Length: 158
Image 1 (tube, helix red, strand yellow):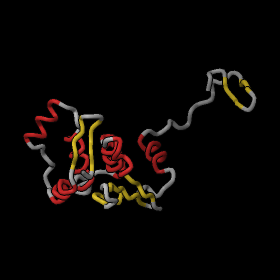
Image 2 (cartoon, rainbow, N blue to C red; image 1 turned 90 degrees about the horizontal axis):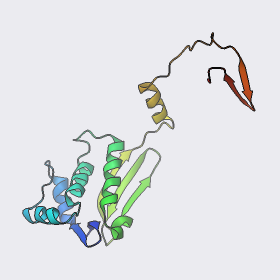
Image 3 (cartoon, helix red, strand yellow; image 1 turned 120 degrees about the horizontal axis):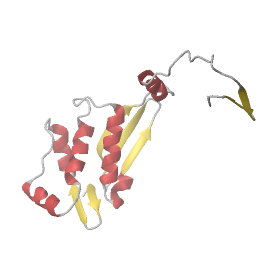
Image 4 (cartoon, rainbow, N blue to C red; image 1 turned 45 degrees about the vertical axis):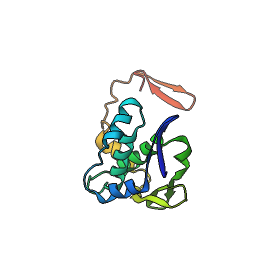
C-alpha cells in the first residue's frame, strides 16, 4: 500500500496503479461505489486526496501557480496517515522544488518539479504592486515632534 490517507482506524489506501491511472487520465478521478459508501460512513479523505493527486499531475493543464501546486502537495501530506508522512519529500534546488512521494519500497510514485520565484523579495513586491501605499502625505499640520528613544512621532501619532 503506497499511500494511506485518513486518521486512526478510518484509513484508505491509494495504490501505485491508481496514481498511474490519474497521471494518464485527463479527467478528474471519481470514487467507486464502494469508496463512496465508505466515505459516507467514515471520513477517510479519499476523495480530497485523489483531487490533490490529480492537481499535482495535471497542474500545467489546470494553469495552477507554483503556490497552488505546493498547496495541493501540502494538503495531500496533511491528509496522509501518520505513518506515511515521511514518504513526502521536498528537494529544494536553486530555482525549483522537486515534490516527491515515495512508496514503501522507496520508489517514486510521484515526482514533479515546480519552479521557485528566483527573486528574493518577489512576494513583497507583488503585495506592494497590488496594494500601493499612498504617496506625498502632507506634513503641514504637524504642531510638535516627540522623540521616544530612537523613534520619532508627531502629534498626530504618525
